[in-house]
Amino acid sequence: MQFMLDQPMKKNQTETDFVNLILQLGKEKEFLRDEIYCQVIKQTTKNPVKQNCTRGWRLFNLVTGFFPCSNTLLPYCTRHLEAIIQDANHPFQELASVCMKNLSRSLSFGGRRHIPSHSEMEAILAGRNSRRLPIMLPGGNEFSCKIRSFSVAFEVVQDFCTEMGIINPAEVKEFSIYATRKGGDGTRPIHSDEYLFDFLLDDGSISLSFHRIIWKQPLQFNNDLYLEFHYQLLLANYLGGRMLLPMNGSTIYQQLAELTALQHLALGLTDLPSNSEVKQYLPRMDRLNSSDERLLATIRAQFSTLGPLGHLDAKARFIKSVSLLPFFGFDVFTAQKVSHRSCPSPSLVAVSHNVIKIIDPKSQNACLTMSLEDMQCLRSIRPKKDKLPSVEISFSGQTQPRTVSFSLKQAKELCHTIAVIMEEMVKPPCSSASSRAGTPH
Image (tube, rainbow, N blue to C red):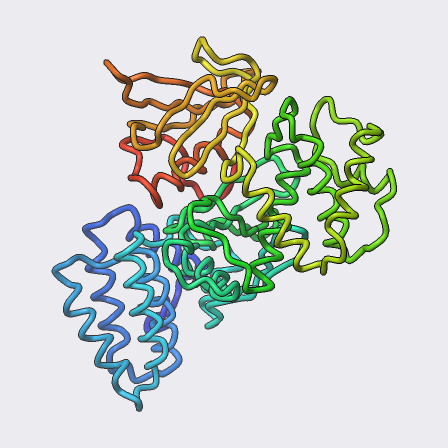
């Protein structure tokens, strides 16, 4: 009642203090949730002061977004909101509709995990429930998204996939939003049921970006945004050395030459690439020399063979060629140490939609392969003094469960990557100590 100004506030108290207290009580004490719902409904029903009633509805907007009511109260609360939504003359019809959507999300996803920041709270109480945020795309472009206070990641991913012409629900699940702390010292995929505003800080230190985390569904090339997104994403993986070209293979020169020529044509360039340009088109890999005469001769021959090729066709062909590489569809991490005796230090940890492979970086042979269906437990372990963080995985062996741990700087990202894939493609891990906190750290 004090928040709605039906009773005077005490000295030194602010509306934010009241809202924080109400939300904290509801989050921590589940038995008080129905009481909070009933009090807000009571105070917003036939309240003679419109200004005070407006404040009450904005509070209800927050409450429904942070925690649901019980199943006992749910049908009464739902009927109350539906009656207002169906009344075209009701002054709070729109806010009732927002509360209904928030309640539905809370029932499905559990509600927001963190109390809003000071600036977000002020915006919500002032009636501003959404804002446009840039989400980075591969290649450095931005996609402007309208994100509401209670938008979950899946909703925003779905909007972006619609822009890319993706209508298959199974393919939509293969995309994810990543949260990265500025400075690059922390990044991880956001789970589909997590609220985006639980990640955003007032200081702007968290940036969001779109990625494809699963590569099971076939690729299609009939949408320019889809084509550009996948070209830039795969190009970054290729140049970063994460596609693991077989350096000892008989076709390595032909593969390098084709992918070099296609990058040049994708820029709309028709003249032969110079030696300095060739250097920029080659992946970051040991034993790869941009001045290798055999490589340069193969590039020239490949460029001539390709002939005139438009930049969009070149990008599509680049994607198709990369998709034939042995480690296409894998996210690759470098682990400084792996606990399994057959794995060298360092090793590469390659994660796909169905397996985890531990790779010898020199031979590129798999030292250990684990099926995600056999995984029993997954957890990240905080580092001890002067040690790297680690990820521990338990999976069913032929005779008994086995446990493997990986020590790497990107432990949190690896742990969440595996967890997201498990949630979307396999099953939730039986146990996870990985943090689902709102910011990457």
